[in-house]
Length: 408
Image (tube, rainbow, N blue to C red; front, side, top):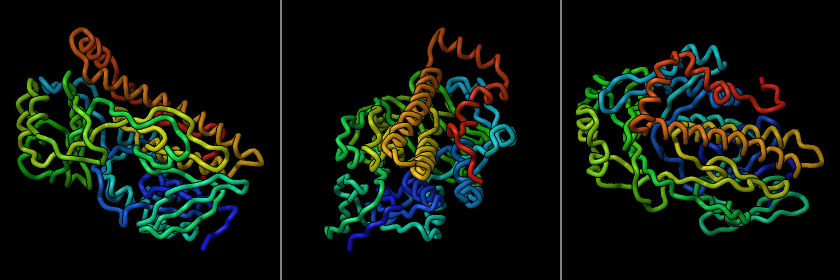
């Protein structure tokens, strides 16, 4: 039976963006119908980094405490030359980050974050979660939006004031809304692996990394990021190389010999590490070009559906969380001109995300630098203390929504 609720939103997608949006709307007294296409939420993906601009918002949503029990709070980000294993720089995190930005910097398994969000949402009476169901079509009308819900071929209608599309980089709803932009292969692929800290690979890493750091090994042909998960019992590795596009999907399989070729010329410990790890999964890195993220007052794209980005700034999850909370703030505060409010929200978010994307591009350029550019990079990094390199990120980690008082 169709449901009409003037203070209800429909959220499509049960990932990080969708679950965060559901919690943020419910916290502001707006009922949520949340639909996830998959019949259940599996442990998809691997590790991710959550900077203080994200963990601060997770704290507001009463998710952070549950997350702290399974996350690791790294002491710093360490930049290492992959050929010599010389430390180029450290960016101070740990206690320094929490004091400066008012929230911790965490590394966590994606599934642990999703489970913490889902557990919080399950206890929220304002949220109705439906797995194995998707929004197949929608139509904007004078009262808001009407969505067609597909539950294994059985169709129903749902009505709300807003449809939030949080259905990822290959968003179906983005195309249904008439969006012109499509996902684009970036030219890079990410090789991912997680493993127990004990074992051959863990022993190799123990000799070349700090167990409490996010380590970034830089090289002209690749970069490798390593950090602990789940209390340090698990290690997460992501190697990024040039590559060809794969089929659409979260991950696929590829010949690990290609990764071995990419790291040729790096330190022997790096080469041994790559050889010791079996079962690499490959993620083609796609981006989404900037475009209109809203349709009148009744439709909004968030997260990867709006602005999938390369991972070089480690801000994909954080931007999705920011999108979700700021959108809920905007809708809850909107007066008669809801269309104008959403347009303002989208413009502010595009400006913020654009700056993050530029930072990611700068990181990639610096990490893969060669010749005189690499020399200049090393001299600059040597001139900056770990604390100074951290404070250079005040604009990112210390962010607050414009004109917003923090929710207590």
